[in-house]
Image 1 (cartoon, rainbow, N blue to C red):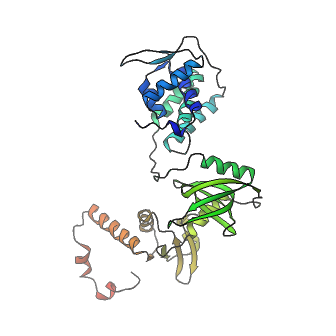
Image 2 (spheres, rainbow, N blue to C red):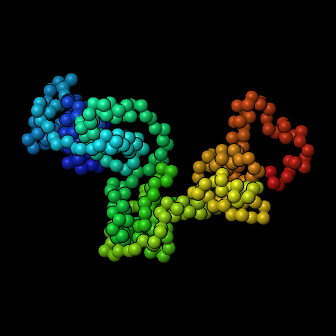
Image 3 (cartoon, helix red, strand yellow):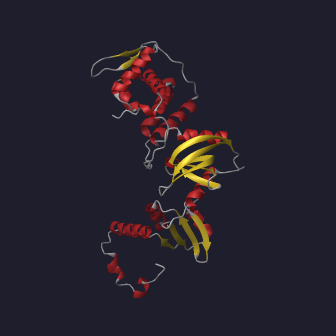
Length: 343
């Protein structure tokens, strides 16, 4: 196992081991190592540190050996109401399963504290939550710098300007001063939105592309009524590149809004219907969404989205048991329909 002990505070890991032993009675070295994401050798080092602090931890040697707290040793309990304990349990499990940028050892320690203080009935209920609930979450493989989310949240709260080095989508790196108005988690990515002093306008940045962040002495005031979530969604839907998605929806703006919620893209009324524009990602999902519409639509670009729709149609034909190729059917159609530019 890779030792990630450098990622987390040693104090946090010591307290987590103490809480786990307090709540479980005894645990083996390998089990502790798995829970804290470190090596067994690191666990032995932490146990010695706790013993040096006067914590009465007993160790059994051998392949089946385990660590336990000496009988009678108690730590002050954390007091919560019944409803708070259940809410905290579910929230901590979600933090762990969604792989949010929270110290894994802290989550394990907090769960251990809850298990220790809960009465039997609630202890069983909390255990049932952890056993029964499963999450099917497909998150992008991105990692944030340690402490970045906390630094930005502090800057938002204190209205403190920061200086950041940012690597853009195409790889270009820039330095800029930034007033962070809010942090948003959207579809697996973390974003911060606020005023960029380089561009002299509100901008949105992805946290995993921030290479360096430093606090500045200057302060700022956030505009009254500013909505960080709306700002991020508007920024994402308005992002444009040569390969951006453009789809002409042959319907009214009111109907289009019902099918494409905020954040899906921008909707612009035209003489032929409503033009949908959005960044060129999640093409398969957009293809499925377009195929489910109950009104006509035509893909203007990109070509890859049209390919996704053709692939989706072919899979649907195979599922329906239609083994004839699309071309064989097309040859029997009137030639005028084959060359219709609106198809």
